[in-house]
Image 1: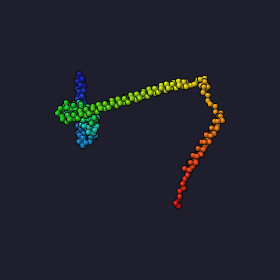
Image 2: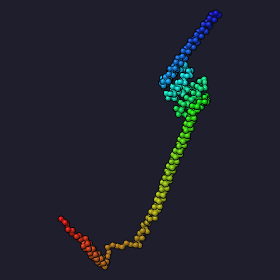
Image 3: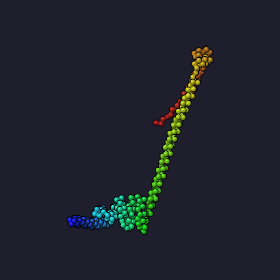
Length: 272
C-alpha cells in the first residue's frame, strides 16, 4: 500500500513538472511572438511591407492565436496590394476579436479590400457589418455609400448589356428570317419560271404541231398556184427589153460626163 502511494506521488510530481515545463515553453513562445510582432511593426512603419509580412507570419508560427499578429499581417498584405490574401486575415480577426471596435475595423478593411478587387456587393456587406459593430464610424458610412453606388452602376451596366444582347439576338433572328424569306421567294420564283417554261414549251409544241403541214394538202395547194416558168420570152418582149437597156445606158453616160465636168480641179499658183 505504501509502495502504491509512493508511486502515485512520483507520477503526480512528474505530471506537474511536465505541465510547468509546457507553461514555460508557452510563455517563451509568446514572448518570442511578441518580439517578432514588434519587429514586424518597425518594418511596417518603414513601409517594408514584404519583410513585415514575414515577421508577422513568424509571430503566428510561435503563437497561432495571436490576434494582433493576424490583423497586422492583413494590413501588411493590403499595403502590398495583396488584397485577396489580406481578406482571410481580416475575417479571422473579425471572428476571434473580443471587442466590437476591433471587429468593426476588421470588417471595414474587408470592405476596402473588396472594393480594390471591384467586388462591390461583398464590400457593401462588409461595411454593413462594420457599422453594426460601430454605428458611429462616419468613414465606414461614407465607404458604404460609395460601394452601394458602384453596385447600382454595375446593375445598370448589366441591364444595358442584357438589353443590347437581346437586341442583337433579335436583329440576328430577323436577319436570318429575311434570308430565309428571300431564299423561299427565290425558290418560288424559280419554280414559277420553270413552270412558265414548261407551259411555254407545251405551247410551242402545240404551235409546231399546228404549223406542221400535211404533205398531201401542201401538194394540192401548189397545184392551185403553179410557179411561172423562166427562160421563155416572146419576140416582142425581147425587143422591148433591148430598147430599155439602150435607154438606161444613154442616161448613165450623160451622168458620168456631167460628174467629170463638175469635179475638174483649178490649178493653184505657187509662190516660190
